[in-house]
Figure 1 (cartoon, helix red, strand yellow):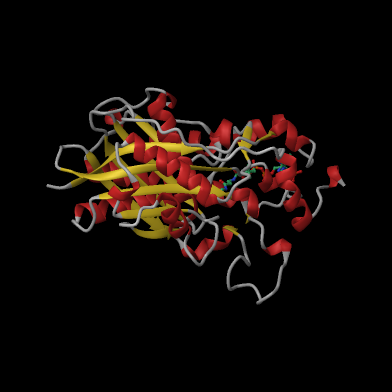
Figure 2: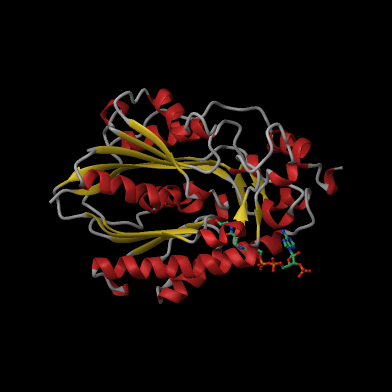
Length: 361
Ligand code: UT7
């Protein structure tokens, strides 16, 4: 029977850092509040477009798999902050890669986007439509972040991660999946007028930034991830004792802790890197997976559970049995173009558009 397995992985985090101490200079907040309420210490702010981070992460994943861009027949970019709506960011990434033989599409289910992409790609591979897929989660969330709003600007960051998925007949790979969405509560988290909800030509800064009902999202997140993971584990016939590592969406360390408690999973089996990057939406899962492999947290034969939730409100999970290789086949000499801009230089465009934060005025 054909299954889908992950054969390559990589990430691309832009070099500019926005720390909690930097945010103390911008909005009425403290490092202590952000750390205790979210677990975040710093996040990255990108000087390049989403597609450029996606390209670098994608090339790194391809190298790790021993593949070239010509080898892929499917390219999915999970993003809710892509370069453009038309064309898809995937089309721009395809051009950068030179992946001329691939079908290409964006997949937007916000922070659940990467799990959704893995489910879609694995089913296309299992069904025989595709053999080798490159899946990239990439976000430039600072673009839709209003740095006068202390409730949201402390949370989000930029970055990209990617995996290569290939067909296999070996007894590992995707074991079970679950996806869901509840559109009746879509307004808990939104960029209200980022699309056709706005009037043509209208530029209303208040409506083009992320707005969020934090506590409502928090509750949905914990239930969504825990219930979905339980469903996938049930389908896979996997008990808690069989799980080696949970890789959850990184939105808030308290959400991650509450999800693990609800599942009954020990902290030692949960991967957390939110302190370094904040919430990078569709990118958190592939970035976390890459770091889990780099840190030896995944071993041959490990059972890994992925779980995510996001705007929509969407959720999804996957139980995955790792194969024998946990090291990349190669690491390419590729990186983002360097920049002389400071983090504040990059954010100045946000200050101009959304409003100058009081502390900087
Ligand atoms: O991928 C999905 C993305 N979104 C999320 O995952 C968000 C989920 N929600 C959360 O992570 C949390 O709800 C937040 C971190 C956003 C907020 O934490 P909270 O514990 O729910 O705080 P709260 O909204 O209940 O606010 C408590 C207080 C308020 O002050 P008062 O009304 O009690 O005087 C806020 O004004 O904290 C205040 N506050 C802040 N204080 C210092 C809100 N933001 C800040 C801040 N610094 N940055």
